[in-house]
Every structure is written in C-alpha cells, then in structure tokens.
Length: 276
Image (cartoon, rainbow, N blue to C red):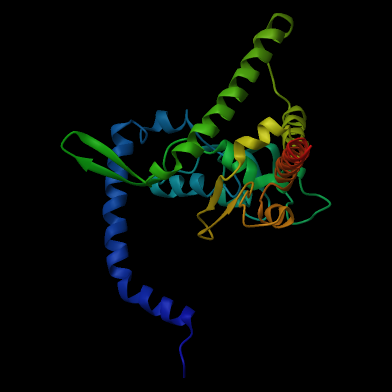
C-alpha cells in the first residue's frame, strides 16, 4: 500500500503533536497573562468591549470566548456569513454584521454584491501592522512577535494613504451634516455599500494605480495573488485574468496601452521629420 501525500502529512502531524500541544499550552498561558495585565479578564472589562473585524465566521470572537471561559463577548463585523455562523454557538453574545448580517454568500442571487470584491476590501481594511504570531514575555513585560513586513513597506504605505483618505472623507462628511442632524450621525449600510461598490466597480485611474503590483495574501490557503497584475511578460488579457480586481486592472492596462500608442505615434513623427 502506497501512502498518499495527505496520509504522510497526517502521520507526521501525529508524530509531532506532543510538541505542538506543548508549545500551544505555553503560548496560551503567556497570552492569558497579557490579557490579564490589560484588565481584559475582569468581568466589567470584557462586558464593555467588543471584537471588531472584517468577518466572516466570527472565529476570533468564538476563540476569545473559549480562551477566557466566557459566553457574552460582543463582536461587530463588516460582513457575517450564514454558512460559517450559527447563533447557537454564540449563546447570548452580540454578533452583528454591518453591510450584511448572515449573508447567503454561496447563493449568487441572494449574496451581497460586496462578495465580488472580497480580496480588494480585505486588503483595504486590513491593519497596517504585521500579523501577530505570538505574545512573548520578557523582563520589560510583554512583546509581540509579528510576521516580518519589511518587504511590504510599499504596500503598507499605499494602504495607509487610502485609509487616511477614507477617514478624511468621513470626518468631512460628519462635519458638514452635524449642524443639521446633531451628534447622532449614522452611516446606513446602504450608503456605505453604494460608496464601496462604486469604488470597486467603476474605479478612477488614479485610485486603481495605487494597487498595481500589490499581493493579496490568503493565510487560509497559503496562496497569494496580485490585485492588479502588471507583469510586462504577460499580455493585457493575461494580466487581467491573473488580477484579483478585474475592473482596476482593465482601466490601468487600458491607460498604459493608450500611452504606449501615443509614444509610438510620437516616435513615428520624429522619424518622418528626420527622413524629410
């Protein structure tokens, strides 16, 4: 009987399971110590805070509840999906999606349109810090081991610009309408969806160019893809096909194609003048 790669992997994982579990137990204790040092584990503290994330299955919220042995930690998300979440798993805990709650994303006729641009918006809404690997305890207190983001400095810089622009827009909007509506300014999900979908489906060239060459990393599948692929070795059709954000890729590549055509026309004019 010849073992498959999957069987070999599972066999290896069983062999090293004690090492993994020992490391996980140590990491868990340090993480709990850190949360306690921040007052997170006090009854009154965790009742007054919430997990805020992009979505979709509220796994972070559920894992925090398991870690702390509590059942009422709140969670607020951009999108929650029905296929990943059942209310029974969360007991009485608050669990809400902003743009859409319990989205039927696997059904094209019912899914929110935002699902067509998940990779784009996950990139936009992600933190500009590195991904946390583990909390470390040292003589000075606690430190944070992050995934190295040195190679992503340019990506982070561009996303910071986009996020700063969005914050400026919201602040300007609030300042304009507060005198009319008072302090209770509410952004309806329908309004937010319209703004986001307009940005994604009908991008301006200057906006789309911010995303050229940026890699979207999917930790779940350990894969990555370009939001807008601009590899010079590919044709425009290949670039668009390999881009996660098709609309952005189309407008960028179309503009570059026009620019190249203009350069060729200008060069041809110079050659004609030289011959004359």
